[in-house]
Image 1 (cartoon, rainbow, N blue to C red):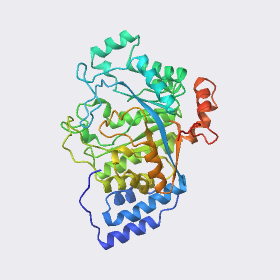
Image 2 (cartoon, one colour):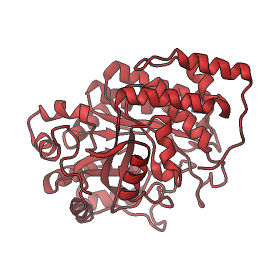
Image 3 (tube, helix red, strand yellow):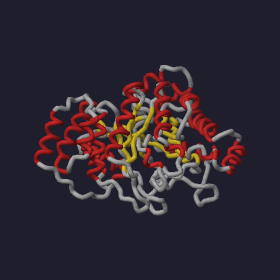
Image 4 (cartoon, one colour):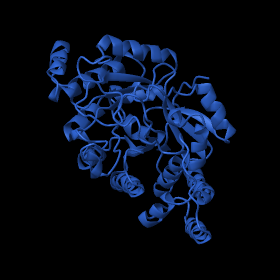
Length: 402
């Protein structure tokens, strides 16, 4: 993370922050007004804010930090959205443009099995066939009507032919497609990213990205809730949003979770600049900004799993533990982070040592969090059988490699 200018607080403001945080009760979420004051607080206030977030995390899940050992499957990097921060997407014919074949998918899954992985993370561009005739031809050659039909088949292939559990991130989904993918994957995800419609403006981060309209993304998350699908979502910070937008994004996620109870994980992901993207020279969020946002996320949702990617906060990613996360997300011993290829995953042994240095035990979970596993295994079928085979008595991953 980059550093930011020191933000000083007045003694009166520090006293106010301390007093507000003293009123926080473990397990009780803070209000929007308090969250807005805390996310704008100065560096002098950061220690007391982090202490409150740690207390909330320890009340929720003490002593253990989890992660998911995964393979990253970029099913296709063709995408109809042109986000200013994305280096993953390609147009047909561009260097690196690729749609994986079934043989490639299965080869990666089986290689991941040998390394103790339990998650097959499918990432892909949003409905590229709606924009590109080349993708329609690729799908026709493969024998599928759409990218989502192909994704469904590849999730089923991995589920049937390996011990890995699919976790698809396919973009916007209808209620019908949520139901179809839920039959072949225990969990799925969509980054909400932000409530800010201002980022849809010309030249902003979501200019020419039709699938990044906030209301559409919220609808997908809500439809997953109505079907009780364990769902991963989160916010992306540093793409032009305001501190108020960050709080409102977290509140929108919290509101849906309070209604449906299906949000298994909230990711706080920080923008990282890269050569070759429209936002190559945009400022990155600083360390204090990231810690502040994570801490506020924890205090807004004290009983929800909060995650932040360690590779995007290297080399000092263990400091995220001070802000109240209880999970590191997916870590791959095999495949790179195709979304941020310049930021390698930490070695699992190094992750374990840094986690233990903060007083925690590192445990491997499945792509679906333990508290959501019993409901899934209660349903008959292949997915339930595969989950039963993969989980231990605590509903974490059965085989935890050293």
